[in-house]
Image 1 (cartoon, rainbow, N blue to C red):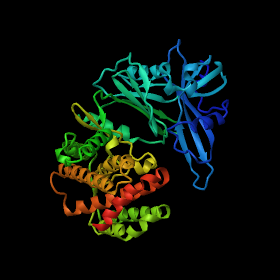
Image 2 (spheres, helix red, strand yellow):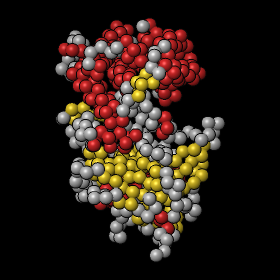
Image 3 (cartoon, helix red, strand yellow):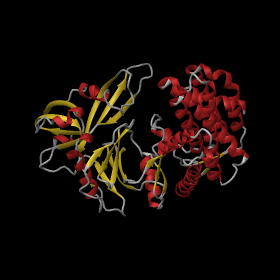
Length: 481
């Protein structure tokens, strides 16, 4: 049998510039604004579920090398669907036109935009129900038992995602394809795997995942297939709607408004507590001594020092922030475990059956090794508290045009924003802690909240300068406390 050109590990017949041009146009490419070149393209195989009467679908890993002072390399996953004739319906996803060995001239498109190509993925997952389905070069589809996939689900690509790509199959399942990939286990898959096997109802169940193993035996997690939550509403959107309800009722307090969110905040606290408990049960918990507490504080101080270079407005609060971190350094130890790592209201979904927590991938900008590190569960709690603070401030800023010439109205909005934030932070925290956190837990929580707010000042300065006042006001409150 002759070698299938689609299974060759290296691709030398493609012009790397076609990938440069395409990556710069996508929402999920994380290197926008940085000079880079494509230094390698590896074809990792044809999707097993392709059929003779359909297009060719081949997956690729594209290696980039950055040419700025920061430097470094990244690898992105770019599946391609190859047609011998141009497909005008896919013009928006066009990547290039070239001669393919044994296929002739082809028109290449990003496969995630094509229903025919996505049907190949779905057929691969369906076929893996009894045992993993593998391609010739190590591209493998895995399934968990317990759910029969709908093989007729029509694919539709989600829009608006920032770091990955997700495709819905009918109303049955949803596939997330990781765009920036690294050798090693992706926590989004490993954590969902553990929680699904444990029977958790606080997540979208994992149905399957896709891997690739290179010639050195290194495994890459490339995609995951999950339960589609038909009745789900984004937690961030629900919180914003609650704040708007409050602002529309000028004479009522937060607990008097029909859209009061405190009950939901409380239920979300219970949900996070249950998820953390299951993670401890499955992966364990470690008690690390005083040196770990000092290392944790040192990391927070280092991030503050770096932030001061970007956000000079932090300087008046630096001493108070360092004092908060010093309290962590004085602890006799820290309990660490698997956590979410990037938790906020946008990582939650409210369904008819309760809250679900999603996206256990961790902070996408961090290297995989850092995202796999154990951490205190209070980091997740702090992320949610900061999200409860953000929601009313965002609506307040969106309303500022109505009140910027009316100091009294602006002050009223600010008061009501703080009332909403305070009420929901308290309900969430009390539910999570099942009462009051201990003294050591309060020290950790205060430091994680401060660390998160410092991070936010840098992010907003670089991306949304008009919003930097939101975390700066939080930092000022930390200093005043």
